Image 1 (cartoon, rainbow, N blue to C red):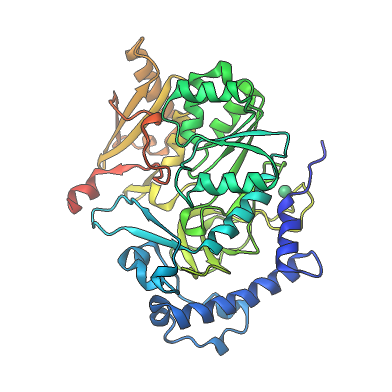
Image 2 (image 1 turned 135 degrees about the vertical axis):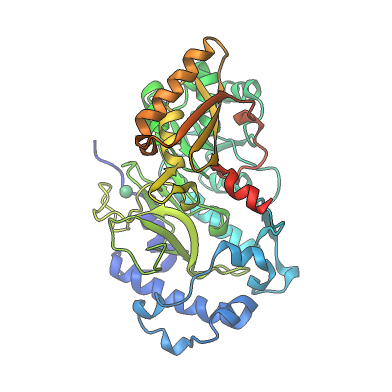
Length: 440
Ligand SMILES: [Zn+2]
């Protein structure tokens, strides 16, 4: 079946004023904006004044020059978020504080003006057109009570295209959500992967009416996409974004083959995480982005910690825009056990969440040779059998197990259920007790 071209293309062409719709003109536009943001950030923000003390605007004449600029990291923001502010503090309309896992007590804060947030609304408006139109009825299972939250921005965006949108907030009550779905004839759900999976397994009867799903804010396991699309015949779209990007970054078109990015507002690169040098299309590396128009808090060459690659092929939808392949996880979740043994959270996500007995799980690294997996099951029947099954799955999927010196312990754990999440922006992770002990 022919795929409709991503609505992101016309939107980007319109907003950037490109005369010809092609990669070359877009690249020229982005370069012009990068130089402007460099100048703006250096003139107005303490962090970039210091960061670029040795770089002069006149020296940035080409992409090669730009790619020599130093990176910005999450640690830089945590250290002093206010040093990134490029406007007086009283002009900030929304502050987002991210709960991060570190023990330092320093928190990552992000600042936005109303205009910054409206740019995200604009992206959500056109991005959502990849999957919805005014005939759809959308339920958002993301926080949306307060001004400038992701749900609030999504609601504003969908109102522009006259699409019905109900923002429930995080999935905290299965029965209540099921009622909302039935009563409002919802056919599209936007939510966090683990919560949407939980809903689909617990309330399969009402999930049957769901035709489209948009998964956001964390790694989306392929096994989950396969389960939802086979069981309910719904189309599963992925969104890529993070608060640092202003929540939104890119969304899949009908080809469901990777994201088209918000390229009028953001410039994305893939770099080698060790050397920092650019990585060619097709190969995986760390995703780095630069905001092109952010007013309160521009970010230049911000290292996301996410693992990604640009596709070398043009998308079947026929757009000239680049396609970022589905994010393959985070570097922080690729953990070294000993010199040549790594484990990766995405392996657990793919293999364990694909087992319909498993509600959720947590991986703990006790030491270099012991992995402990706590598992929550949907019910407690035949527990021994289920635990042996988990071991079998892990032996089949984990490359570390080839080594005889890694022991895998599996036990039934008392974990928080997916409907007890309180913060939508906390990403799933492996707990490395070796580190926690050092930091402790
Ligand atoms: Zn496409």
